[in-house]
Amino acid sequence: MTAEDILSSEDFKKCADFHGHICPGLAIGYRAAMAALDWLEENRAMDEEMVATVETDACGTDAVQVLTGCTLGKGNLILKYYGKHVYTVVSRNSGEGVRVALKAGVLELSERHQELVRKLSGGEATQEDRKEFWELHHKKSHDILGGSLKDLFTIKAAHIAIPPKAMIEPSKMCERCGEPTMVSKLSEIDGHYVCKDCLDNDYQPLAE
Amino acid sequence: MTAEDILSSEDFKKCADFHGHICPGLAIGYRAAMAALDWLEENRAMDEEMVATVETDACGTDAVQVLTGCTLGKGNLILKYYGKHVYTVVSRNSGEGVRVALKAGVLELSERHQELVRKLSGGEATQEDRKEFWELHHKKSHDILGGSLKDLFTIKAAHIAIPPKAMIEPSKMCERCGEPTMVSKLSEIDGHYVCKDCLDNDYQPLAE
Image 1: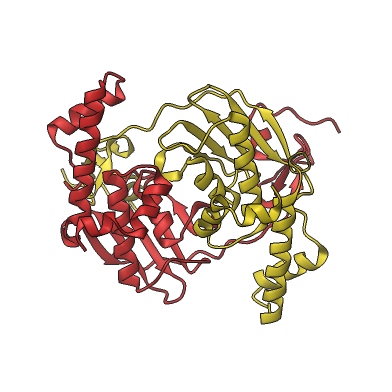
Image 2 (image 1 turned 45 degrees about the vertical axis):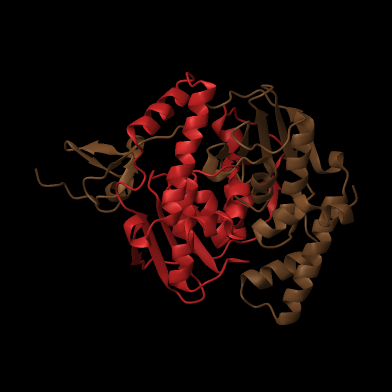
């Protein structure tokens, strides 16, 4: 598939729609997720057929959620704040797993692109700077979408323990704020059950 | 809007498509996200116009991602593992914020529904049990979608500090595994820059 084929595909449009814009990080997530699904010979997880571990909360993670069906709210997305474009997907069906890791240099931006990022971050970007930034950003995304898989990633089998499926768990009221809370997230303190929010935020003992 | 109106709406279909199925948690997330957007008088965030804090990684969070545009990969979703269906959304445009908290009892399941959950979790559910479980699950979702907002949630203005926008950050190679890593996530150890994955997993000092 060429970059143009991908850009006009339903799958990529869903990713861009969910994420809100097209950017190099989303392009990496798209390529990584598709590579993982190909490797595993799996389709999108309707239920919890797959589990993904993402090592970043950057843009690529949104494409992984859309394409693999491993979503934050379904309990089959494990998030690690490592700051790395590394995506590991395991299949509950086959027991197989694959680790897709971005190669060094792929996300390197040109001097001009970096300068525009600095200007945007510093709030000094003009209207033209913004326009140029998005042009460079789209060009970089295009290059990633059209790049060869072996230039983008190191792809290896991953042998990791598959976590148990998410459970439906009853809630109980926090005795401090009165809000329903999953039982496993309540702390017992001074004989009372209290949620983490109440515990974290200036906890005062409850009257007996 | 009736439950039927919602079930046949494009917005709800997008949530169900992303999440993979319809369930009471997704219904709560749909109602909470819509209530927050109404309160803020905002539309879905294309960029980072809004920031959402979710106090659970349960199903509702997927509807919040789809409807508010505050997604894990865009840096405008803050995740707290409190086990509570509490969703706080703030607008960068207006500076206003709203906290939508599920009321006690809304997610309570009937005795039979709970029994089926236990059977499913224990791997003892028959084909008929599964069918009945999903019927009860859909009925509960329907009730939540059609319920009145004041029966479902406590909705209050939230005055919270708005976090800075996500930054595009350069990566450097981890000196141990050689994989590109966001600079702010690297640790300096023995004069070498090492990623958290290498640091966590049986770190051995690098040769000088």
